[in-house]
Length: 215
Image (cartoon, rainbow, N blue to C red; front, side):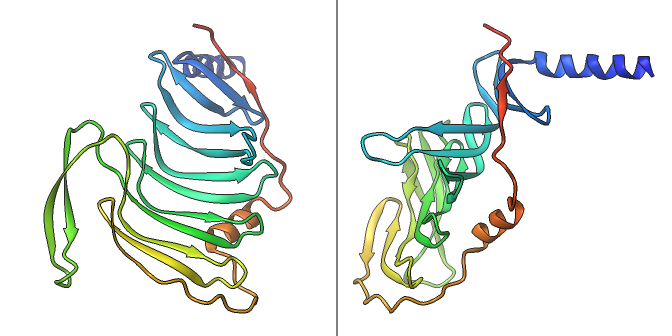
């Protein structure tokens, strides 16, 4: 039994040794990892306090070489899911959704990430005048994600779209007129919110401790 424990301890120490800094959850998992080059890697949890009247929040997701990647979830400081964002190359990409604290959808944003390692990026854009036809567009990289697709603003009480905007590579193509808001009625919560509530029912917030190895 002792040799097995010894091997396990060696494995654990070697695993932690590759990180310059990290936090350790109650389950022993590493979080908020920083490698020897100062880059963020793996699962991260970020905290933002209230600032100038804006509510604070926390976000959880994944870093690769100091860049956000994949799905990131935003929570109020009370633990409510208030947003789901997607990243590519550290920039917002695809559909990002935001919710009220009660779980009602209030905003959908559509983004396009450009590869920050390239000065220009080549994109295939659907031709609005020809169905299922695409054209190639070369875009100069300005170092930020660009609005691309339909942005929808919802009335949380009714679930109806009250305004929408259509963007093509950052340019506003058209803005729909606001529509009357329907009377308040029961609206099913979005799937992301239902999944979150089901998975975290009865759970306490994750606590972690520092695991810094110094400079």
